[in-house]
Amino acid sequence: MHSAAQTNSNDNPGALGALAPPYRSDPAQLRHIGLAQEHRDLDDIIAVLSRAGAPDEALITRLKKKKLQVRDEMVRLEAALAA
Image (cartoon, rainbow, N blue to C red):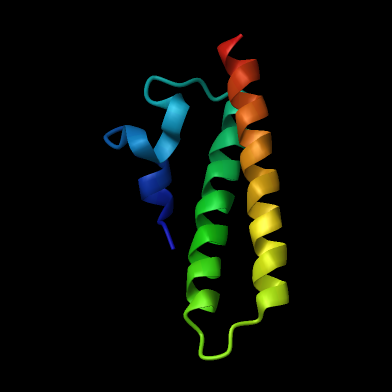
């Protein structure tokens, strides 16, 4: 998993994607940061489950769909923030 310090780091623009420093603390940007963390967490969980001896394919599929939904919301927020 990724640490909160990594997510909030101004020294790591990759951690914030399009919200590289300086960024404001408005609700849309904070939501984007939270979604980015959720996306990374889902990716980590999917990776661990995929390596399991007998992976639960139905669960992995649901998590991948959720990860895509999170990414779609991130893209919408990025577009709104850029406007």
